[in-house]
Length: 121
Image (cartoon, rainbow, N blue to C red; front, side, top):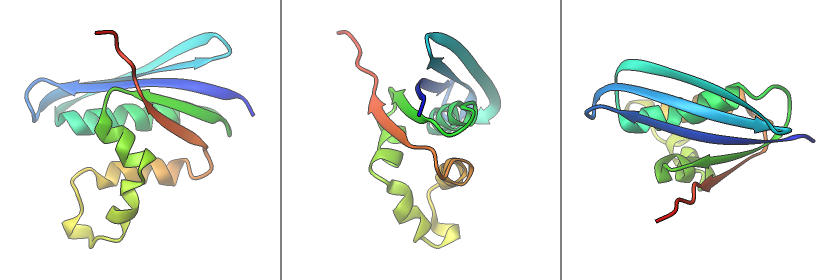
């Protein structure tokens, strides 16, 4: 199975405020960027959107290594926070549960490993 490396990031100006996201996909040495923006959003939603859209840009069944600077995104998937959200009554779920469920629904068979971006200090 071909492996893909995915680097993601999202941010907004003000929280909430206008925001953007981007994902860099690296496969067989080739790089591709997907990105977007929303006029009124939160930082966490942009971080999640970067992972969602990055995974959506991966064609076929591949192992994806996702790197993010967002511990929220990493923990959401790596630590399976979404399983608790699934068990929660819909009107009491976290604001971002819908985005996590979108990733799972769109990519049920995609083996993805989430890890932190290591930065130099």
